[in-house]
Image (cartoon, rainbow, N blue to C red; front, side, top):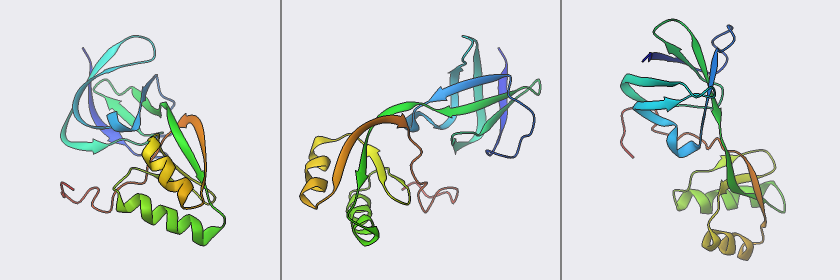
Length: 148
């Protein structure tokens, strides 16, 4: 079985990938794991330290081939606000609850949770169910050896 030996951040590798691995956001924080590729093959990810993989990152196999990481479609809420300040306020409430969130210019995406949906609607947000790839903002301590 081939092994993955390193990770290249999205945009750093110009060579096309030979395979794709599709993972939801909660399975993209890895150090050692058997990965199932798009063609049914498996490879062993075995890195010295845990990494948080993003959509578009490339995994380098010991034979030099590249595997592209794709964010899986997930069931999410798309949160829209009355305006930019309201969006910031909603982001603050979500951050205060330590929820993974993908923050965009005009909306926030989070995992579905009916209690959080009710809270957001009570704060005046429009909340729609969507299914799409999820790339939450990496935490402030990402890459700094902090366990939080």
